[in-house]
Length: 188
Image (tube, rainbow, N blue to C red; front, top):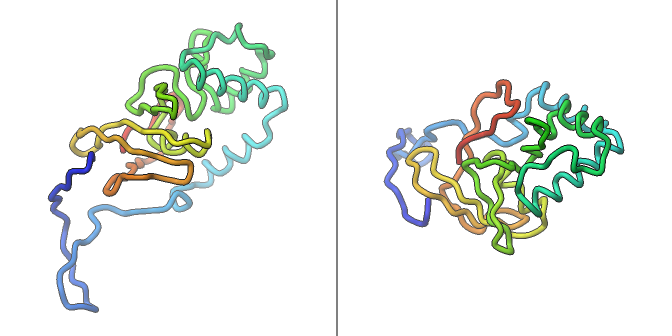
C-alpha cells in the first residue's frame, strides 16, 4: 500500500491476560524456515554441487540480465552450451527457443514485479520473493513496484540490502508449492 491506512476487518479473539477482545490473525504467518520442505532443501543442496563451468556461465548470465534486462541468446554466451544446459536442468535458468529468459532472481520478460535499480534502470524480478532479495544480491537499494494481492492497489516498496525502508502492512503471499518450473510467485 502506498502510505494510506486501510480498515481491514479481522476476526476477534479474547485476550485472556487483559480481558478484552483483540484482532486475531486472519491467516497464518510463518518464517521462511517454516516453509521449507524436504524436497526444496534437497534441491538447493543439489545446486551446491554445480560445476565450475556452469557457475561461470551463471555469473555472466546474471551480469548480462542486470546490464541489459533482455533475453540472452545462448549462442552469444562465451560458455559451453553444456554449462548452460546444466543450469537449465537444475532450474537455475529457464531456456526458451535458444534464449535464457529467466535466471533467478531476474526475468528477461515482463512480470508483475519491477525492480527500479539505484541508477533508475528497471528490471523484472521472477517473483515477489526474488524482488525482495535483489537489494541484498546487488548490495544497493532498489524500489520494488508491484500491486497488492488483495486490492490491486499499486505498491512502491523502498528496499535496502538489509530490508525494507517502508512497507508497513506489506507482506508476501506464499501459496502451496507445486511444479514451479517456468512459473513465478505472483503476489505481494
